[in-house]
Length: 438
Length: 169
Image 1 (cartoon, rainbow over the protein chains, first blue to last red):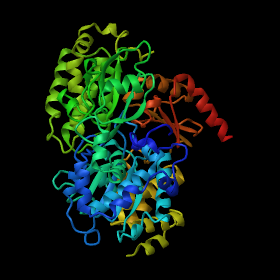
Image 2 (image 1 turned 180 degrees about the vertical axis):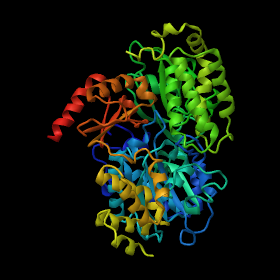
Image 3 (image 1 turned 180 degrees about the horizontal axis):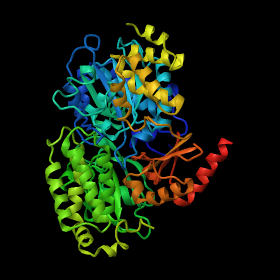
Image 4 (image 1 turned 135 degrees about the horizontal axis):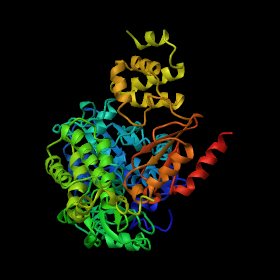
C-alpha cells in the first residue's frame, strides 16, 4: 500500500498485499523498533505504557488491553506456563479488516505478539486464524519461519534472555470460535463450546494456564505504541481513547473498503469521504455500526462519532468498527431474517435459549417475510428479544449479540413489520426481499 | 501401550501422516490439542474424512472415536462425507445478501444443476453456503477451493465455472 503516512496510518502504512515485507525489509522501514525498546524495559513498565496509551480491544468488546494484561499472574515465563493467543477468527459478518493485516504485514502482528508475550511473560504463542483465510495462512506461516530464522523468535531473542515461539492454528470453522473461551476450547481439541467465567482466561485459560487472547488489530497496534510512545499514540486519536482504527463499510456504498483513521472519526467521514457515499439511486436507511451483532442505528445517526462511548449512548456498539449499510431498496425484514439465520446456525447449542430460541426467531421472520405472518408472530419476536437478549441468560454473548439487531430492528422497522402481517397473503409480490427477489 | 505399537499394526493412514500426527501430538501440551489440525490434514490429502481414517487418527491421539467424531462433526470446514473435486462456498451472510448473493446462488445452482449442499453427478463440484468470508468490500463473495472471488454477480457464474472446468482438462 502506498501513499499512507506512517505517522498517521501506522497500521496500514507497511501493508503490501502483493508482497509483504520480509524481516530485513520490515527492519529498513522502521519495523522491530518497538520490540528492541520493549526488551530493554521491564514487563511491568510495558503493561503500564500500554494501559496509559488507552488502547482498547479492537475485536469488538473494547476492553482496555493493558488492564487485561495486568490480571495475568506475574511469575516469569521460565517459572510458569502461560500463553499469548491472537484471535484471527474474523467471522463477524461485515468485517474484513484483520484479513488485510495478516495478508499484508504479518510481521507487524508477530512483533506485537512478541512484545505482548514479554509483557505478560508467556513462552508460547498461537495465532488462531479462520480456516477460509488461505492466503493469510500461507503468509503467516512464511513470516513465522522468516522471523525465527532472523532471530526474532526462539531462544534468547535479540540477546535479551527471553525465549518465545509461536505457531499458527488454522481453524476448522464456526463463528463461536471468535469467543475467547470457545477459541481456547477449540485449541484444546474439543467442541468449541464457550466456558463459564470465572475463571477468566488471564488466570485459567489454555490447558488451565494463564492466557491472554487479543484481536489481530489490537496486537498490530503494540509495536507502534512501544516504538513511538504513549503521547504520540494518544495524539493519533480524535477522542479520549488512543490510536487509529481500521474502519470500513459494506453494502451499497460507492467504494466499500477498509480505511485507517483516527479513533473517533465520524461515520459521515468514513462513508462519504472515504467510501464515496451511497451508490447512485440508493439512500441510507439504517446501519449496523460494527458487525452483525451490533444494534441498528437509523440514518439520523449517519454522522455519529465512531468512538467507544457514542454508539453505546445511541443504543448500539462500536463493535468491530466496520459498518453494514441498509439502503432504502433492501427489505429490513429480509436483512434481519438473514442475520438471525446466521446466528441460529452458528449457535453452539450449549444453552437452550440460544439453541432453540434463535431458530424459532428465524422461522417467525421467514413467515413474516413470506407474507404468512400474524400479529402474534411479531409479539413472539418481542418476547424472544426480551427473554433471550439480556446478558446472563446464556453462557456467552452469542445470544445477546443475535438479539441486538432483532430488538432494535423490531422498533425501528415496526411499520414494515406491521405492513407485512396486515396485508392479505396474496399480496407478497412487492414485499419480502424488495429489490432482491428478481 | 505406546502409540508406536498401535501404528505399526495399522495401515489405514499413510505412514507420513501417522508420523506427522505423532510429532504434532508430542509438541502439544496434551495430544488431543493436535486433533483439529490432524483432521484438516486428513481432509487435505483425501478430500474428506472417512470412518477408518477418523478411527486411526483417534487411536494415534489417544482419543475415543466418538470423541473425535464429535469434533469432526462440530466444525463446518471438516467433511465427513465425500465432496466434489472443487468445493464452492458461496457467502450467505448479510453484506453479500444486501449485494444480491441470493440471485448469484440461484444462478450457481442452475448452472451446476444441483441444490446447495449437493455434488454434481460428475463429482467435479460441491456447492455449500458459507458464513461471511471477510471479503465484504467485494460482495457477493465466493471461495472455490483456495481461490477467492468477488464481486460475483449472476452473470459472472458461467465464466468462473467454465474456467475451472477447462483448467481440469
